[in-house]
Amino acid sequence: MALTLKAMEYFTTALRHGSIAKAAAELNIAASAVSSAIDQVEAEFDLTLVIRQRARGIKANAAGRDVARKCEHLLEDYQSLLLEGTALKQSQSGTLKIGYYAPIAPAFLPQVFDAFLSNTADATLELEECNNDDAQDGLLNGTYDAILFVAEGVRPSIEFDTLITAPPYCLLPKAHPLARFDAVTCKRTLGCSEPASGGLLLRRAISIRHAAGARCGLCELN
Image (cartoon, rainbow, N blue to C red; front, side, top):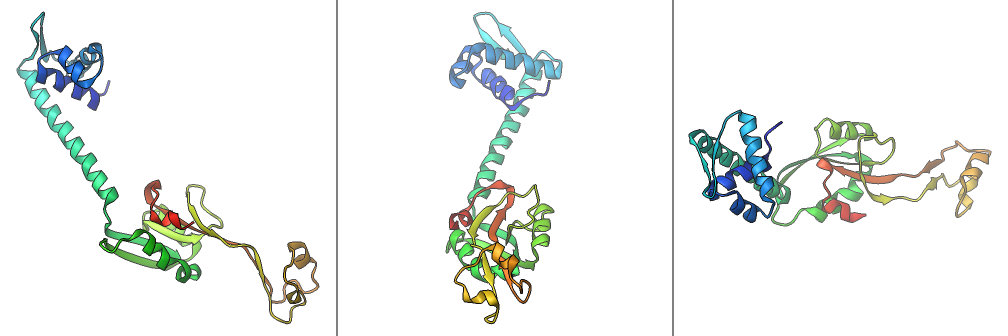
C-alpha cells in the first residue's frame, strides 16, 4: 500500500504529541484512524518506528524520529506547493500565448483583453494569427494558452465558452433576386433560380477556449 500524505500527517502529529488520543483530538478524527496511520507507516517501511507505552503514550525510536523528520519535510514541501499554485492561479503575470482566427479578431480581442487584464497586470501577450484548425491544434499541443476561434468543426476534446452567437444571415449582391426581401428562409435560398450567384449564408458562434479548464474574465463577455 502506498504511503499517503494523510497517513504521514497523522503519524507526525501523534509523535509530536506523544499521544494518539491528543493527536486525534487535534485532527478531529477517531483515535483508531491515528493508530491505523502509524501501522501503515510502519508497514510501508517494514520497521518498528514507534514504542507504545501503556498509560504513557507513544515514543519514536531512532528510526521513527528519522522517518518523522523526513515526513515533516515532505508535508512542508506539499503545503508550499499548494500555496505557490494558488499564487500562480491568482497572478496576472507572465506570458499568455493566444492563437486567434483572423476574421473575428478585430471585433473581439480588445474587449477580451480589457475584461481580464487589470491596469497593474504584468502580463506579456503573444498573439498569433491562424486559421480555425490550426488554432485548435495549437491549443491541444500546448502552443497556445488560449484561442479565439469560430465554433465550427470543434475537436471532441476541446471545451469552450461561447462569447457570442451571431444570427444566420444571407449576404447578397444588390442585384440578386432575393435582395429585395427583408428576410429569407433557407428553403427559399435553395429554391432560388440563382442560388450560387454571389450569395453567402453564414451562421457562426464566436468562442474562446483557455487552458486547464479554468474560467476567467474572458468568459464574462457572453
